[in-house]
Image (tube, rainbow, N blue to C red; front, side, top):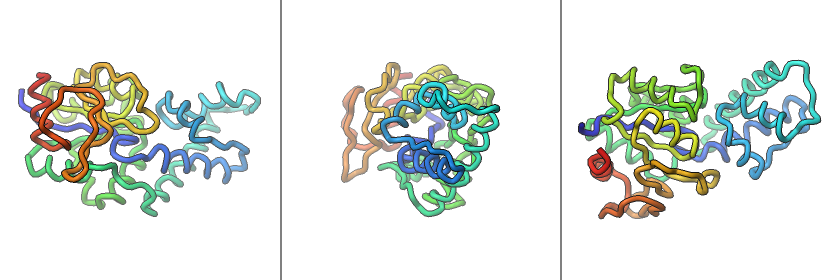
Length: 253
């Protein structure tokens, strides 16, 4: 089948939101709530093994802050995460996090070529809206036929639920799509839905296991700034455009 749609993860894939957005927002939320917690970049690297903000907080308490006690950890995690989300949206409104190289260009080229776009992420819808609206404009939210985000499915990544949800909503077969991810949990999730996946690594994921990915790159690249191919079949392309994606899709069909 021909390539019909591109499905994008958000955090770490579209922008370096983990380091420059979520981590900053978590620490500001802790401070505002009077908690003496401070997540370093090194610690956050470890916490990213768990997807979902509330689960990440509970994982931190279980594995890294065992002396902290609270009568209702679920309620605490929910309240921290709600405040953190508000702070994150504020940071996005301030333009704190730009898109990664090649992302805006690829969106434009894909739309011109008639490819359908969607999002499959475990972050909250508010976070997705804030990033897209403040980097591409509010109208850009309409570029995405489906925005699969938050708790729209029962199981977060690495489960394949969010990708299966997007496929169902778009009435597409996995073989008609390519997914874009940045992490081990992401490649497992997309692969569980049988979607071929292109990886762009970041500082948190550059040592992850990406078995099953059709290619692993440092970023999408630009015409004047080629990508670095980490694994994959060499082609004449030096940046990710529609022709390159069609070639990859055909090779792995």
